[in-house]
Length: 209
Image (cartoon, rainbow, N blue to C red; front, side, top):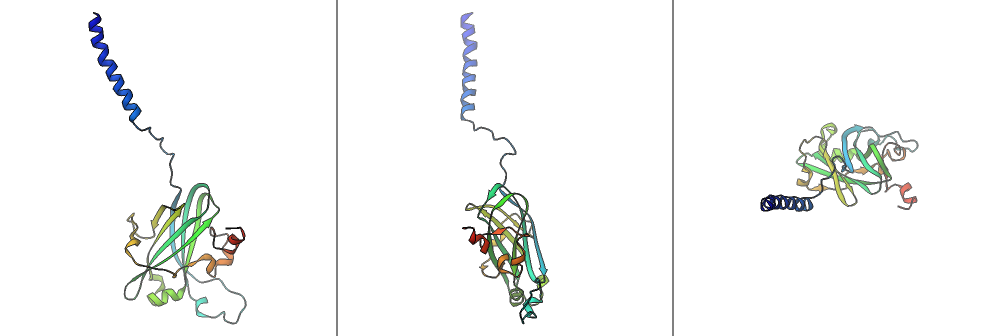
């Protein structure tokens, strides 16, 4: 009887040991819904708008002040309580006269608090559009891509028109210095409430950044 009991117990103990070892080696399951993307693009928009009226001066009728500028906006959400050095990189493909040109630019933001509906902006001078694309400003922009970088990492990217979830802009040769930060544009002085705080503004410099 004892021998029968031993024969029954040993397989059960061995099976229990195997299960215990397997449980020790298996990675712990992560609870769902804990890890979220720190930043996510929610909206990309391209508009052609006239610059704000400038007071004073005798050259207020210059052409650049009368024709529309390309206004690019990126709305994004953030998860960290506070984040500095949040960089938005822009890739704008223009339908040039002979070929396609990809304008590039970037801006870096500080004091980005947790929440939704953060807005980053970028502008394109009307003479850039005219030089490369002629006078058809409304049809000049084929597509826009953005990347969000934080702490040296690419954390999110998106496209205005393309439905493919790829960084298609990597296939183009970039042409820098064709885009303006908000602080460099005619909207700069009055746009502090519309866009995130750029570290390149004078105010950021006074803050020790």
